Amino acid sequence: MTLSRFMEVYLADDMPPIAGVGENITIWTQNRWDHYQVDWLEQLPRGEALMRNFGTLAANTTGAATVATELQLDEGYMVQIRFEPVDDFEVLVWQLASQGRYTIRNIHCNVSRFSAQYDPHWKQTLLFILGKERDARFQLRNVTDYALAQTRMKFWGWRFNITKLDAKPSVSVWIPGEGRG
Image 1 (tube, rainbow, N blue to C red):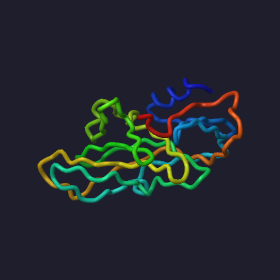
Image 2: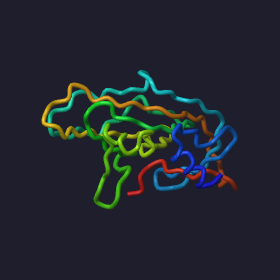
Image 3: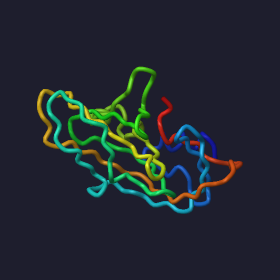
Image 4: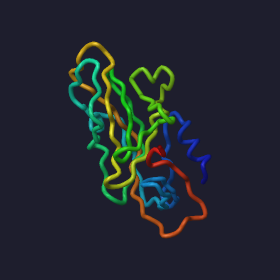
């Protein structure tokens, strides 16, 4: 497996897992590449259990970057997710405390419910979250002239149990676990 596997997963409409049991992943997080082997995995289907309501949001305001507790993990776990904003807001994604995802120099790209017009399978929202204290944060912006009573997001994907490897494996899938701002 190589970077081409990453592209296969990114481009797939149904989002297969990035790696199977016994396969290796190499993930960029905390300014370094770490190597892991997948011990087991399970699908996280769309549904109410993985829908987060971030609460109310006043007109023309931006909220604080907030951790989605539904996606918090213990060490030895990783999730591969996509997400979909349900209500009329924009979301900026942060991994770790200050690493913006979907950034280009001075631009931090957002996702909204209207992103489905360009990306009906939410491919652009693909995220990998690795272990404890490496949470994804979601910063919501209400760009409308009315208050939002709720700001819901759906999440779905895969959960992996992983074991850290001492050495770089000969074959691995390389994936981003944070922005590289």
